[in-house]
Image 1 (spheres, rainbow, N blue to C red):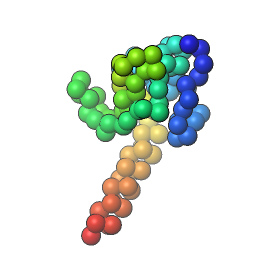
Image 2: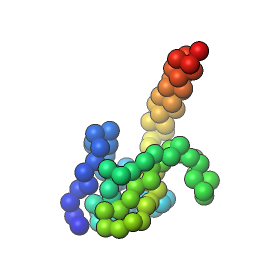
Image 3: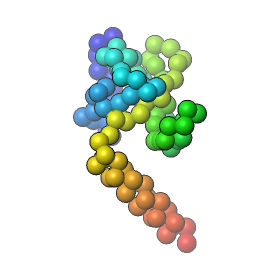
Image 4: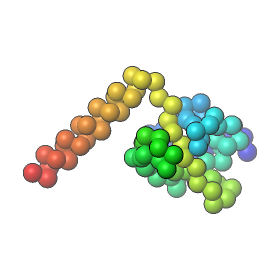
Length: 96
């Protein structure tokens, strides 16, 4: 398996080097075997205590599901935190 996985639009431009699979570096073969079409997000924390968010991503070759954590530089984390805060605030305003 050496083909790149079919990625959802929001993942365009990312590679295996941008992610950790179950906390470890992802090989090319593992990256190609991910089925992002059946993935779902989990805001965390994980059972191991890792903060979220992370994605549960099944494999194309079987029924195994793995946790994919983004490797984000600290400046991206601030952007993500701000996005979550704005989305949260917008949800509270709409419910009022």
